[in-house]
Image 1: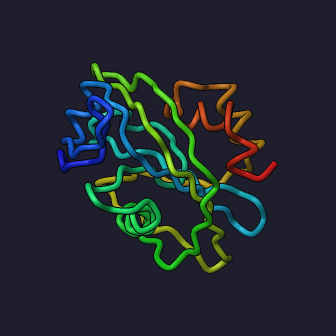
Image 2: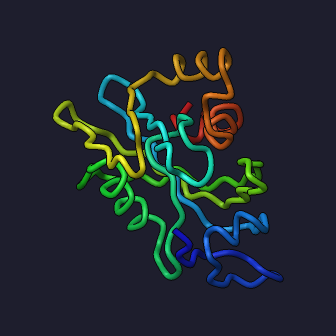
Length: 173
């Protein structure tokens, strides 16, 4: 759980343990993936109860931190497989965003995030890894926004920020 991720200390990008980066609120690299169905619905995941922060909350399809020395796109592809059993999806880079959010337990996510979109054909069925994901759902972006407005505490801080501040970047307008 505490593998080295790329984080900035004194302006230098260095390998830092993931938990240490969150406890210190260090700015670090991250990846977020949004898997869309052909009919415009987004694949969401509910984080497993055993996650060390934000357990049981709904998040975008996949979000993670690249290992030290790992590029963003291979990281996104790797984690789609590890978390959701999804392989071979074509990833489209949508840009970078930065945010800082309290995720509880004295931890801060301060991330520079590479955002990716992937389209899933009708044959694509996620196979969640129960260590990572307890549940999945498909929602339109409008339905997701309505659910966040209705019960924001059920969603991760980063998904709430993405939908409030970066929806056009992610979904293309």
